[in-house]
Length: 201
Image: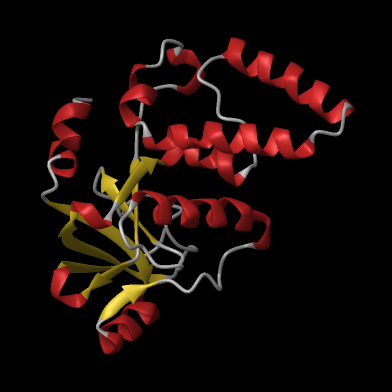
C-alpha cells in the first residue's frame, strides 16, 4: 500500500471522497432533512465509552466541532458491496459516495479501532503488550484504576497515526493497514455524488 499517495488529498486539505453505508429507510429520512448525521441513540451501551472517547477526539482535533456524535464513513478502500457485515443480512441499504472538505474529517485505522471497542491497550508489539500487562496488574493491586484507564486512552490515539501504524516494527503483531475509516459531523446532500442501493449479504 502506498500510504503517502492514499493520504495526500487528506493531508493537503483537499476535497476527499468518502463512502458511508446506511439502511435505505434512513436514506429517505436524510433526503428530507437535507443532511446525514448521527444522534448516537443506536450506540450499544457496551461500546459507549469508545464512542464518547471518539467524540472528545473530534472536539479536540477539529476546529469548532460541536458536542455531537460523528457519523462513520470509509476513506479507503471503497466498500465492496459483495462483502458481508455492512448491514444485517437481507437488509436494503445504500452506499453513499460523497466529497467533503478534509478539514471536517478525522481519519483512523479501522482494525485498531477494535481495541477501543474492547477497552484494550493498543500496543505496537508483543513486548510492549507484555510490559503493559505487568503495569496493569501492578496498578490493579494498588487500586490505581484511573491510571490504567488514562494509559489505555493515551494508547488509543495511535489509531490516528496511520504512518506509525503502517511502519511499526512488529508486522506480525498488528499487520498492515487494510481499511481507513473516517468520522465527521455530517454530510450535506449537496456533497452526495452517487447512491448505490443494495441488499446486504
